[in-house]
Structure formats: structure tokens, C-alpha cells
Image 1 (cartoon, rainbow, N blue to C red):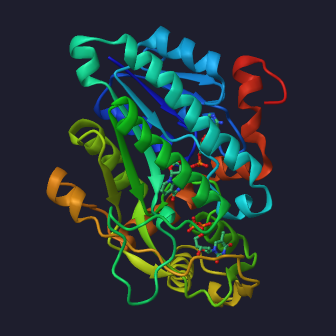
Image 2 (cartoon, rainbow, N blue to C red; image 1 turned 60 degrees about the horizontal axis):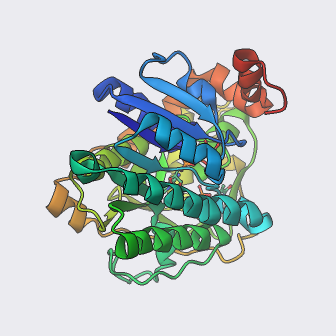
Length: 355
Ligand code: NAD
Ligand code: TYD
């Protein structure tokens, strides 16, 4: 009874594993390349009988094949990805390598492994691919939210690479009967998110007195979901989803970026006021817009609600307060991430260099 997760040292993956260990307790093996976004300290101290980290690339065919043969998982959860839109604009090649070719390699290895299964093992097996709402492109202000039928229209190298991986996953169901499931989720926030993304960046810059860079007019809208709700949605889809189906996941909390930044400022003003008594809003600075910036994402999640009974439990107000609290309380985590010291974890624990 083992599952393999990829990208489990990242933001969503580590929150998934922590919850899995607590609630399910089945063995979970994490295949993670440990890029800048992978922080193994997030999972330090777990019971080695339940959690195992393998440092490696989903694009490494031999490694993936050996892992599948060794652990005989009943499920593979694919979260490994290059995930930051801004990085994809300046350096798209890594996104194609991991998100497209890496997923392809994982699917190929899974197809061979699935072919070796029989009986109940074959019936139970699932490949769950974690994707994004960004594959659907950008909405106009009065457009209806994205459904699972919305045509793909990705606008950034990141979303194009995720769209390609979604198409490959779908093709492996249609062509090879691989029992795949795909989730397309909106913007996540919560503890342990790398502070290059909007919310943790605003919290840490806000707290330290630095500028709060808002791209363009800041009126771009996103649907924000607390990471633990997304984690729960992934589990529901894994246990109850129908192979070949895709499920949109959202937080029911559409906000403009300015609304988000102002909300972060208000919480910081309350919890840790500036010494000069001014509001953190004085730190807001409108900067040059992101090229190809999607104006609006919104999710219609009636399918997962009606077919699997899932709906998000955290309001944006509660989740954001909890998140700001977490970043203000976990100063050691924050310092290690800011200084890059978290990357020394491997040397300390495995004696490896330059990882
Ligand atoms: P993240 O960037 O925090 O973590 C990604 C993890 O993948 C890191 O641990 C990294 O080391 C690992 N990784 C990268 N390349 C790898 C490779 N070639 N082989 C093995 N591991 C590799 O990302 P996240 O925010 O946790 O997102 C996880 C998944 O969820 C991604 O697929 C992302 O597209 C998707 N998603 C994210 C959001 C969001 O708002 N963060 C929303 C919807 C979907
Ligand atoms: P981000 O967290 O990068 O997620 P995504 O691009 O995947 O939606 O950005 C969320 C929104 O915040 C997006 O519209 C870009 C904007 N943004 C800023 O205005 N300033 C920033 O410094 C960052 C990182 C993002």
C-alpha cells in the first residue's frame, strides 16, 4: 500500500504529505529533484517507515522505472513542475523539460508498470495529475467562470507547458486506457509557499518594510484557495474520481490583486504595526506589468461538488489571517528560505554537495 508523489518537497506537495501522514498513514515515497522550490526541511522528522524522499528527476527514465518496480505503488500523484509564471517568461526551457517531457517520461514509465499489473492491483491503480486553471487562458470581466469544457487557451510558457502535460495525460487514457485523473485548480496560498508568489512575497516584503510590487493596475483577478482545501480535493479525486475525468477546483474567493495586497496590509497593520504608525499600504508600488498577463481567472467547480461532494471550507479571510500568522511565527523557516540556507539540508542529512 504505497503511493508515489512527485514534487512533494514543494508548496502543495509538502502540505499534501503532512496531511497524508497524519490522516491516512500509508507509505508515501516522494520523488523530487529539489530545485530552488523544493525544501526538504518542510518534511524533516517524518517517520521513515511512512515517508521516504528520493532526490531525482521525473525525466530520468531509469530512475522512475526502478522506483515503480521497487515500490509497486497503487497510485502516482504528479505534482512536480516548474510553477512560477514570471520565471517561465524569462527561462521557459526548464518548463518544457520538466512539465512537458518530464510528465511524458512519467507517463511512459507508468504505462509499462501498469501493463505489468493484473487483477485487483490493476483495477485499483490511479495516475493523478495536478494541474492549473491557467490552461484555460484569460476571462473578460463578465465571462462565465471556467468549466471542465472550456477550451484550452494558455498564454504563458508556464500555462502552455501545463496544458501540454494535461493533453498527454488525457491521451494516455484514450490510447492506452491508463486510469488517469486530472485536477485543474486555481491559485493556492498558505504556509510553506516559496516567497516568489504574490501572497508570501507581500507578507514578507510588507513585514520587512520593503516595496510591495503590484504589476500594472493590480486589477487582475484570481480565485484564491487555501492550500489545505486543495490538498483535500486531491485526496477526494484520488479516492473517488472517475478515471479519464478532469475536475476543476476553486476557492469561491475571487479577488483582484489590489484587494489581496490591501488585505495583507490590513492584517500586518494589526499584527505588527509599522514603527512610524503608517499603514503598510505606503509600501505599495505599481510596477511594469507582466508580459501576456492574464486578466482574470474564475472557477466553476460544480462538477467536483456534485459528483464527489467536495467544496472548499476555508474562507479567504480566515485562510489569509492564518497564513500571515504562519509567516510571522516561523521566522527560522523564513530566514533559511531567504538566505538559501534551506539548500544545505541535503549536505547535513545526506552529506551531498551542491544540491
Ligand atoms: P512548487 O514550485 O512549490 O513545487 C514544485 C516541486 O517540484 C518542487 O519541490 C521541485 O523541487 C519539484 N520539481 C521541479 N522539477 C522537478 C523534476 N524535474 N523532477 C522532480 N521534481 C521536480 O509548486 P507548487 O505550487 O507546490 O505546485 C505543485 C503542482 O501544482 C504543480 O504541478 C503546479 O503546476 C500545480 N498547481 C499549483 C498551483 C499554485 O497556486 N501553486 C495552482 C494549481 C496547480
Ligand atoms: P502569482 O502568485 O505569480 O500567481 P499566477 O501568476 O500563477 O496567478 O501571481 C498572482 C497575481 O499577482 C498575478 O496576477 C501576478 C500578480 N503579482 C504582482 O502583482 N506582483 C508580484 O510581485 C507577483 C509575484 C505577482
